[in-house]
Structure formats: structure tokens, C-alpha cells
Length: 85
Image (cartoon, rainbow, N blue to C red):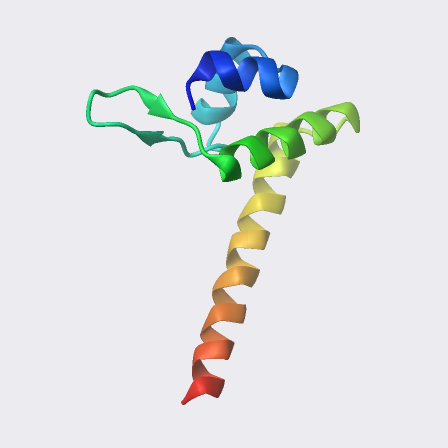
């Protein structure tokens, strides 16, 4: 999905989308031609960011929340792999 479609779908400007990417809140895949390719997970993340901003949660707090989530997912996956052995 291209950025124009994401803008319309989520209701966030391209300037803000790129800002969130620069801040490390969003990791967008690049196509072979260098264009950003947005996927379902990116849309979900932007919707979370939009909600968090409405709740006056800062960029720093969001970054911490997303990092903790990533860490928890790592440990859950690691634990599940251990149980499978």
C-alpha cells in the first residue's frame, strides 16, 4: 500500500507518518524501487499511534511501550520454543 492510501485510511498526514518513521515508531519496508510499502501491521501501528496521541502519550512513552512489547514477544517465543523441545 502506498502512503497516499495510508493517509486516507488512517487519517494521518504523510508528514506525520514520516515523522513517526524517523522517530523509530514505525519500520516501513522498502520496495525494490525504494518506495515505502505499507502493510497491515504498519496500518495497525499507525492506528495505535493515533490513539496514543489522542491520549497525550508522548513519543518517548510510545517508543518504550513498543520496545517492551517487542521484548515480551521475544521471551514468549523463546519460552514456547523451549517447551517444544
